[in-house]
Image (cartoon, rainbow, N blue to C red; front, side, top):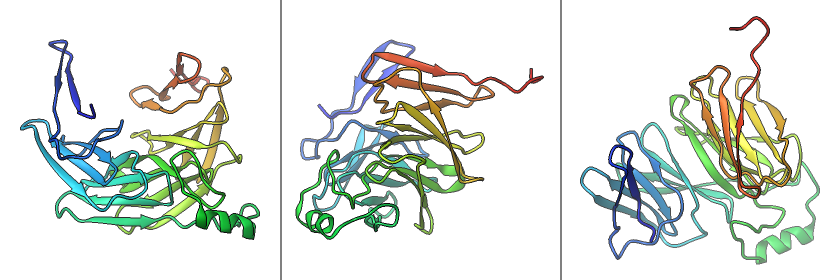
Length: 262
């Protein structure tokens, strides 16, 4: 139905918020801003729901490549990723203005891009799951609100992108292995490390912004196709939770503490 639904753990009941009929259908993703409003992307932009009043506000631009998921920064600007291309939409929830941030196409610095590749890229239609060698395919971003940073998985480019939420400067970090397909990112709020799933490699990776280094962890199950990741930062070291989409498992990763640590 494309309608946000609230579950009350005290009552055990669900409460739906039917969106207005003239609003575009929303996707699978929701997130909360700093005021507790619910945001969801759609093919023309995004909408906001105030769960206290049930009021919807729509933020639309002309239809374009499919919007996918979104993250909200400390100033309640909403960053919508568009994996069928190389750009992000930025919704200013205060002014209603929507800007676009282009992520440059692949240049061939890391691998050979031929003239034929460029010709195909100019003529082929893109989707969230198919791309030419030039595309980035940003998806499943996460906001580190304390550091004013948006982290974005560049699915087709095998890179993790860091976007300064204020200056919009983009810095990209190539993953250790090609064709690993970074899919989903989350942040450990205690140390600001970024944890990502890699759809094609049965691994997860931790990125330390202070050293700009990746650490990969090989999983014991093959064919996991992990699309989500959560960090429980209440434990030390943190506990990582993963749903294995293709093998019907949920994994909990607990790290050994250093010798002598209680």
